[in-house]
Amino acid sequence: MPKFIVYFAQYHEDFRLAELEALSKLEDVAIEYDASKYSPKSPFLIVNISSVEEAAKLVQRGILVRSIIEYWGHGSTYEELFAIVKENSEKWKDFKTCSFKFNVEAFGRTLTQKEKIAIINTFKFLAFEGPIRMKNPDAEFIVREEYRETYSMSPAQAPEMIWFGRLVGQGSRELIDKFDVKKRRYLGNTTMDAELSLVMANQALARPGTLIYDPFVGTGSFLLTCSHFGAYSMGSDIDGRQIRGTAGFRLGVNGISANLEQYGVEGRVLDTAVFDVCRNPWRSGPMFDAIVTDPPYGVRAGAKRLGRKDGTNPNISFKIIEGVENYKREDYYPPTIPYEMSDVISDLLEFAAEKLVVGGRLVYWLPTVADEYDPKDIPEHPALKLIANSEQPFRSWSRRLITMEKIAPLESSHKLNTPEHNPAHKNFRDRYFSKFERI
Image (cartoon, rainbow, N blue to C red):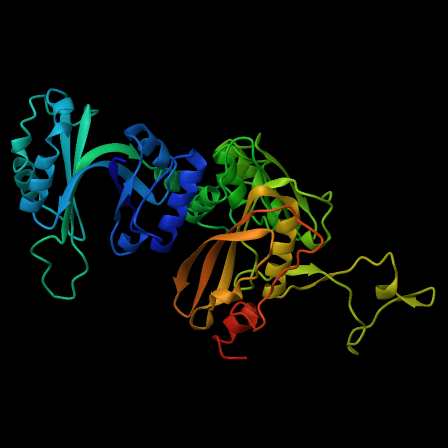
């Protein structure tokens, strides 16, 4: 198959391959690449794709992909690069007379305009006869010099690698600016940043005709991004104050509804509701194509669920109605109680195993103590398969974006397999505020 160069953004490096695989499934574009050749330190990866059209289709909604380039050659020196380009001279003939431009940049270094012009002049052997057009040319040729990190006071004098090819498609990184939380009408203290919200929508395979649910919806970041890509979405939360908001930016526009109007997705966000997901009103059986969520883990907002007081605390008194303490009555409406993080995750997987359709995805964030994390910390379920596990580090702790796919209908014999040891996310809130002392 023809070769192409995927040019990644140098952000969230641990998420890039996971998103690329999700894009492959979303767009039904088969890709082949050598994962051993991938380096988080490099934004370049060679992939095999059947055609230019399929390559452009693959990356059209990529967030961590800047562009995709038809491969013409690469080398550690220009002499080595030119030798490869000349071996593939059959690629030149289709562009002999068309308008063109060269785009020259360096990764890990800034090139002067004089250096760029000198590099362009070295490609004169291509002998293109068409006019140079800086805006909307028929063909745009990409030259990228790659400089890796250097610990010397002076920058590297020669690139480690030089990449060359023709631009055939670009990602959708402009959406990061569109959904920038600084531009959003309504925010909360747990609002997810735009870039990762968009990546999660891709991981969830959000697309027209799908139904996506967030059981910890907060201020609705995932409803916005999933519905932007055409999915129908809905959310719920035990605390309705974040959903409603306390003040609109315009009369009559409050909470999540302000953002839905801002981004024009009111027609695809079906509704939001207030209830405890542990006591949800959904009918039994599968109904969602994806569940996308960021469970509250107590750093900015603690997880809560409904629960009965047990009456064992002598400092808490209860009303007695008709000789029965009210917390024992059948019509007692319980208050919220803390919801431990490992219990949240276990319940979330159980919920997903039942409510997802086969082929549906669960995409969620898992906080963890960095130096205690073990891959076995992630609960397993016979109906769910782990697709991706990407880490975003924060010094002594990190959060992991976990993507799972439902691979079989739920059966009565299916049981959640939780870690036998205490996972690194257990009692995360207490660990966080105790500076991760061992408990």
